[in-house]
Length: 465
Image (cartoon, rainbow, N blue to C red; front, side, top):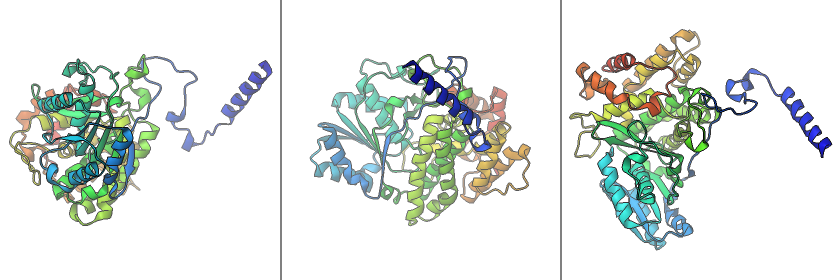
């Protein structure tokens, strides 16, 4: 036995000495510490995603999925607009075909609030459901995640699971019911992630719940559902994919994030950039560069819309584990403090800034700011989006990416900065105040920021062109 262990030990040492040291495999991420230590910064990352099923018409299988799960009482969540459209009808047909007992909740609010979450939670608690189906965009999927969570933990206070510092940010330890998510937009990637975002009305900011435990059991990615999306919804959804990819790829590396958790259950869903998330982020970015403009300009371009539907999931896998940073952190008060803005193509009875729009309007300023850290990643992103970087200087990475983004947005008729959606310099203190609680994401910025930095970023985002 001792001789055998000695041989194994020698073999491991030989393999270690023979390990490839070339630049391609010599990245810092690949240098595994000899032993994990619970110091100030983390030493590990964890990948968690939902099961994904893709294909035209695959929605018809949902009834069978629920039958296979043994579901006897299903909650179908959607919103008022979608309840009359083909994606929901396709789900209803499948449920009827396989004799699934269900109740519909179609009161989901586009851009949910704490109150709209609570209304859905109350419905879920009363229904005593053993499975959930969410059909819609991020608002529907996030609402359904929250309803599933609190129905499974009926004694919990609402703020127990809400992200700190607004809520208590407790880890989820209760078992949840199966949740099948059917995205009808190509943006949030919520079908892959353990994140649920809402407007906290009292503070006029967006926050959310982030836990691997609330991610859907299965994401049904059916590109047929994207064919009825109006132009601006395609655009704003796509901008969310764009920023998910850019932010997760440029986020603070996982092994520089602190503190290191004392228990793996405390490791956050958003862990910082890592070599697995990087793959998904870059792939999503390449799809956006190739297909987003086509998907917006031609609703009959099935190839473009199908690819953007996949890109949303790919970026979701990336940012759902790496996280996002300043564009998203700053977007939450932009959405939460909305005044009278009502976007084209959104059939809503309240003012709102679509999430993807609120995120992308600050992107030129943000990446000009963050590029001094990991400028090579910012240059790589600019090149993917069409910039010629053959003679570029590394110190100009931020300006090059910012200019590339401005041109991209100008070509797609995006509103000319925050001023175009109702904000002025007088609003900057409130926007900064609303960003400060978003530590879950702002601390993943590769470059730390002060209140003065945030003020300057908001001011630079007032006008884009």
